[in-house]
Amino acid sequence: MENKTKRLYGEYSHTIDEKNRLFIPARFRKAFKKGEKLVLSRGLDGCLFLFPEEEWEKLEDKAKTLPITARDARAFTRHLFSGASLCVADAQGRIPFPPSLKEYAGIDKEVVIIGVSNRIEIWAKQRWKDYCKDTQDRVEDITDKLEEFRI
Image (cartoon, rainbow, N blue to C red):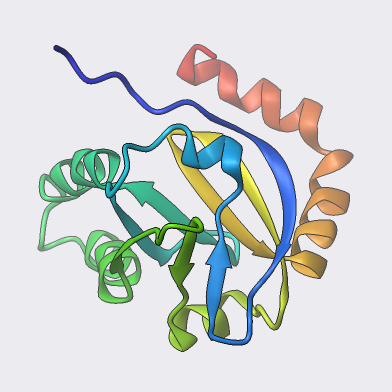
């Protein structure tokens, strides 16, 4: 049977517990198989990315095609892969949250977890509010620029 791309949508507020674990919302957990490996990594725009292992492998395969001689390609792959952490949600749907990734994303306790099609993004609550406020007025300009990608 052919695997389909994950479909992750929505926005949820949660907190990091006292043992540095993050509760993944039930709606997102339903998209994963029990015991499925996930990869948590530094993301872009100050958030963290959480990929199902299968989606992570697709991204990794694309990254492997980047030329090692290109400075920006090296910087991007270092950023993405050096902090990556393989994890599995426990029976309550929690994943361990490495301190280095918490620090990178500016997360103290409160987070916003959003579904972005094939990945989950995890944001510090205030950083997400600031990001939304900043981009809200630019959405139409951004949309115009995406036309070149045929979206």
